[in-house]
Length: 364
Image 1 (tube, rainbow, N blue to C red):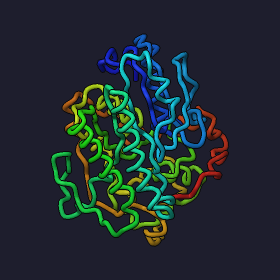
Image 2 (cartoon, one colour):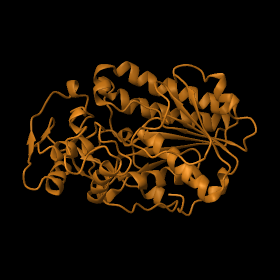
Image 3 (cartoon, one colour):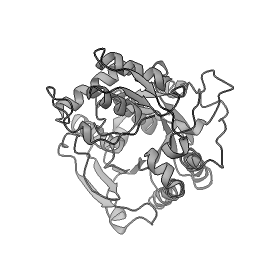
């Protein structure tokens, strides 16, 4: 990651604040910045915020010698004094706002808390960043903001209009919250001059993905490694837009270091987009050894908390114009994910059910 041809020197002497640093994407970003620090001697200071438990995800490797301070911040409240106390003396403050609820079950059971968490949390982060005269804020949004565009199956990019999101569907708490948060970024940029960019992440797959991740790529792979059929709780026709984890990190850093404010960039690999049922079949073929198959058992979406199915194939052209190019296709990302599970001790090569049977069975 540190070898990427990015203007790393823009971070020299900076304090980089990462909300949600104890989560998967936030934790991988901390690890990537630690590697850049060691490779380019950036004199970085990292601050990771958390709500429940400090520390990087257990499956990630330990950091090098980059200073990392943990600060507890409930994003429904104003920033604690410790966060502002970490900034003095830094040559610029950069904020990567990664914290968000991504659990489908939580979206189904607590949609109000999910919506308010996204909106209020982003407002608190932007307000604090403005007070600190932050050099840049990078907001991690989601490709769910594109909504339903089934009548327009062509590849959609950031210039295309956003599709419909049903405001009376409780599950819309997540995409509508993300849209509103993106709008907040634009308002802070235009009214207050805060330098903001938005990265709309697709589903991230590959190295760094936890073996306990409840989302479809990891959940399907767990089932197949356990020798079980993949059971879809939907028709499987929804289009998924995926991106390799290292490619996604590279895209996130590209947006942060080179992107233009206030602009949104889609971080997906268009060559890896496919329907959920196709993803399930790919995993069965790759890891099942002919023992597993895909079965469909449709459940009420209001209970599962799954997003409304869309036919969106998304483009990453705007990010490509910044110089980003995804390198890894989905099948290889899946293989690297399983290899990472083995290497990090999350599963045993001789007995792949170790720890896997502890994972939640959340299937798309």
